[in-house]
Length: 173
Ligand SMILES: [Zn+2]
Image (cartoon, rainbow, N blue to C red; front, side, top):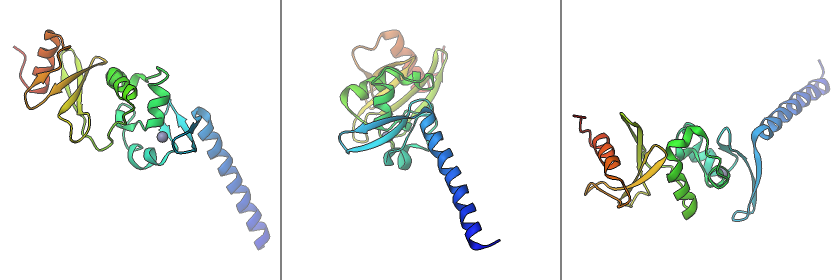
C-alpha cells in the first residue's frame, strides 16, 4: 500500500469519526450563546452535559442524580425553563433558589444523603463559608443552622421532626 492511499484512508476514517461525533453532540444538545463569555456552548438537558470548561473539568464526574453535575448553562436550561429532570426532583426547590439568586452550585461542596421512612433527604451548604445548609426533602428545601440545630421559620413542625431524626441519627420511637 502506498503512502497516498494510506493517507486518504486515514482521512476518510477521521471524517467519519468527526461526523459521528458531531451528530452525537447535536442529538440532544441545544446550542446556547453565553453573553457573559461571548462563547457558544452545547447544552444537553437530557444527558445533563455541557461543552463548557466548568462542566468538563469539575462536573462531568458527578452522576445524573447529583446537582453538582449542573454548570450554570445547565441550570439555565433545566431550572430556568422548568424542566428539572426526575433524577434531580429531590432538589427541585433548592435548584430554583440557586437559579433565582444567580448562584452556582459549588462543585467542591459535600452532599450528604440519609434515608428516612418518608423518603430520601439530602443536605449541603450554600457555599463553603456559609453556616446555612440546604436540606432537601420531597422536592422542598429547608434552611438549617447545623451548629444550633435551628430551622428556618417556614419549616413545619412535623417536617422538622422527620429531618431532625434523620440528620442527627435519632432512631424512630
Ligand atoms: Zn456549561
